[in-house]
Structure formats: structure tokens, C-alpha cells
Image 1 (cartoon, helix red, strand yellow):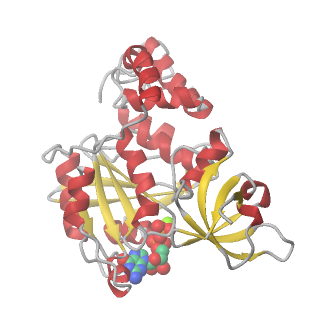
Image 2 (cartoon, protein in one colour):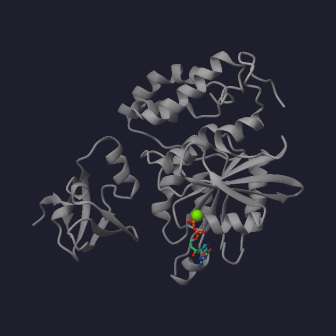
Image 3 (cartoon, each protein chain N blue to C red):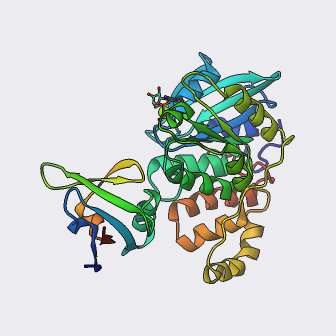
Length: 269
Length: 78
Ligand SMILES: Nc1nc2c(ncn2[C@@H]2O[C@H](COP(=O)(O)OP(=O)(O)O)[C@@H](O)[C@H]2O)c(=O)[nH]1
Ligand SMILES: [Mg+2]
């Protein structure tokens, strides 16, 4: 347990408590690693979730939302993982409740790694979300699922080329039969513990956009100091006028001024 | 023959290519996130009994768009 909140006696929360209070996520003990599971709807996310966690899972709601949340645990190489199933979305940016939940958890839940599941039969559509997540966090493993369907449709996915391009591990999986899931677990283990460093592709914006972002960057950098958030991406959200993100960011950073760094998100009030 | 028109004007069974989105902010974002970026081919599949929404085939997925949304998506007939 780390430092606790100094300013308010009611708020004696560790980072483990923070996950529970804000996201309803239960880290059994401090050493457990948190893995987020993201993807478009209908790509086999739940099938992967079930295959990895088996019966060690429970469902509830995201705090304050009517969005269903499933979480479960599994072990790999003696390490315990808590897997958190995010709502299926095509994006993190168009402000539906599902997208806000997924975005907030990836941004402020600070998962140790994120698995993005994509549909091997419609990669182009799925890569939109992949690029969005890669702009926020480098700790990503890609599961190209429905490989059996792709094969029967005559679609061949060049997993190595995709991994080269995106700069993160890419595993072909068929969740229904379990094919590829051991390799997926291994890569998640390596990325979450930092044994495997990723080098995600960075999106290049138009010079006019970049110019404005560069002006904002110094201030944004000091604002998000101590949070694992890509300042460039945050600056882009400010330019978008993304009110919902701004609100969450304000909540998170204003707490940071009053309370010790790293405990910023902990107070439930 | 090559002029641009709103997607809502394309008849059932025809295909069109996205030229431009006359939308801003989150509604623009939402349409882009459906894969409707300029250059994308769209097929008009069917209209619901009440005339709205209409089902489109976009990058292998069937997506329903309201007439109001489709009218801001500028396309070229194929
Ligand atoms: N053929 C095939 N079907 C799959 C695979 N993974 C999942 N499915 C099926 O795809 C459908 C959607 O899966 P689900 O896990 O509910 O997707 P989710 O919406 O992403 O959670 C279900 O009918 C699954 O049985 C796979 O690898 N191959
Ligand atoms: Mg599901």
C-alpha cells in the first residue's frame, strides 16, 4: 500500500482501492497485473475473456453507469492477472457512454497492458480503434481473432507485417477453439512486466494541426506529469473541445494538486 | 454524370464513393469511426419500412444511417 490521502481523513485509499472505487475493479493483491480487453463489437472479446478466465469471473456495472462490466482472473507463469472486459466500441472518441467507459479505463485506470481484439476478416474497420488506443498507451498486444473465418473466406493476414507496421506484438487467434491463446498470454505477460518493449506507430497530423499542438504541448506536459498519458493525444482532445474527457482530466489532475502524486485519482469524492 | 450528391439520394442497390463529410465535431467523428472516410465505397442495401433508417454496406459491415446523417455525406455515384 502506497501513501494515502493526507488532506481528507475519510480518504485512505491505496491504488488498489482506487481501482475498486472508481472502476469497480478488484485487484486481489498489489502484485496482480491489470489487463484491459478492448475491441470492436462482435470480434470475440467475450469468448477470449471466457477462455482465459474460465469460471474465475464476475459481472457487475461500471460505477455510475448502466454499462455491464465483466472481470476475471487468470494465471500465467505464476503471475496473477485481472482481466477487465471493456465495452465493445469502434472508437474512443465519439462520446457514447460505452466509449467513455473504455476511454476512461485505458486513460486513468492505468492498466498494465491492453489486449485489443480485432476481426481478421475486416481489419481495415478494426484498425481505427487500434490506432486510437496506440496513441494513448504503448502497452498493447493485438489479438487478430476469427483466424478460422478469415481462412475459410480466403483471407490471409500477414501477422508479422502487421506487427512491424504497428510496433506491437500481434498474435493470430481462433478464440472458439483456443488456438493462439497461450501465445497471447505469453506476450501479455512480457508487455505488462516490461520484458518486451513495444514501439507503436505514431500518427502524423497535418502541419497546421501539429503547429497548434506544439504550442499547447508545454502546458499539457506539465498538466499530465505523473500520469501515463501521451501529452500529444491529450492536446488533441483539448483542441477537439472534448468536454467529457476534459471533465475526467480535470477531476484527475485537480485531485493531484491537493494530494500526493500517484494518489491523484484515489478520492471517491 | 460525375457530379456529387448526398448519400441519402443514392437509390437502393447502387454503390457510391465517399467524397466529403459536411459535418463537424462529434457527428463527423462518429461517421468517420464507422469507416466512412473519403474514398470508401458504400452500397445502399435497403430502407426500413418507414423509410428511415437505411442500411448500408460499409467495409463489409451493415450499418444503419438516418436520412439526416446520410444527407451530410457527399458521395459520387459508381
Ligand atoms: N469462427 C469463430 N467464431 C468465433 C471466434 N471467436 C468468437 N467467435 C464467435 O463470434 C461471436 C461473437 O463472439 P463474442 O465473444 O460474443 O464477441 P464480442 O462481442 O467481441 O464479445 C460468437 O458467436 C462467438 O462464438 C473465432 O475465433 N472463430
Ligand atoms: Mg462481449
